[in-house]
Image 1 (cartoon, one colour):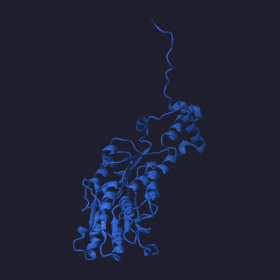
Image 2 (image 1 turned 180 degrees about the vertical axis):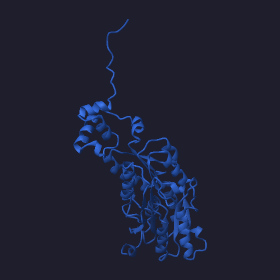
Image 3 (image 1 turned 90 degrees about the vertical axis):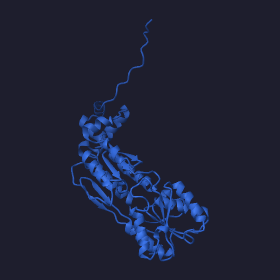
Image 4 (image 1 turned 60 degrees about the horizontal axis):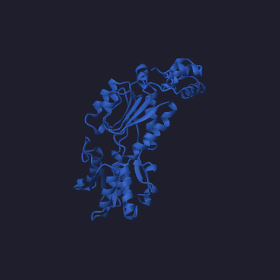
Length: 351
C-alpha cells in the first residue's frame, strides 16, 4: 500500500550565486568577500562586504573550502605550528593572531606537534608560522622543500636561515642568556639553569643552543663544571612544578635561577610561593622568553624578551597570508631586552 504523504522537502545547498543575488552583487564580488580575500579592493566597499556577509548568514551559506582552495590557491586560514600547548607564549601568540586575523576573514589553526611538513604539504593554508625549524632534524631543508611545494606563505622562526621565497623571523636569545647569567652572578655564588627534558628534539637539552649559551657564560666566569648547574625537569608545566617543589625543599635549594622558557618560570615561581619562600630575597628568577600576564598567578616575572613580540609576529604572519604575490621573502630581526619584574631585586628595576 503506497502512501500519499509527502516527506519533508529536501533542502538544496545554498550556492555562491544565491548569496550574490541576495546581496545584489556579482558572483565575483561575493567570492572575494567570502574566500578570505575581503581585504582586496575587488571585494568592494565596507558596505558591500557587510551586505554579502549578511546575505551569507541569512541564507546559511557554508563555503566549500576544498573547492575554494583549488580555485584560488587560498585556504582561508593561518596555521601556527607551535609544537606544544604547554608554553603560554604559544597560547598568547595564537590569541593575538586570531584577534588580528578575523577582520581579514582568516581563521587560525594551531598545530600542536612537529609534523608541520607532512600537514602543510597536504593542506591549503594562506600562511604558516613554524617555530621549531632549529629544533627538528633537517629543519631548514624541510622548510625549503615545503616552500617549493606549496602556495602557503611560510614564516620561519629560525636563527639558521635566510629568506628564500619565504619570510624569516630571526630572534635569538643567546646574548640575552649571557646577560642574565652575569646579572645574577654578580649577586650569587651560584646561578643555575632550569631546562626541560627534550628527548625527542634535535638538539637535546644539553646540546641545545640555549643551554650552550648558559654553559659558555658560566665558563667565562670561572665555572669548571657548568653542566652541574643545569637542572633538567620533565617537559610539561605540571611536571616542572612538581620537580621544582622537590628541588626547593632539598639540601641543594637554588638561590638564583635562569629558566629556559616562560612556562618553567611560572612553575618555579608557583613552587616557591607554595613553600613560602621570599621572592626575590630567597630566590631570584629570570625567564628567557616573554611571560604573558594572563599566565602569571603572582607578581610579574623578570624576563628577557622582545618588546611587543606577539603583535609583531602576528603582523608578519598576516602580511604573508594577505600578500600572495611572488616575492623573495623578507628578514625580520627582533632584538631582546630585559624587562624587570618582581622576581629580581630592586636594583634591577631601577636600571
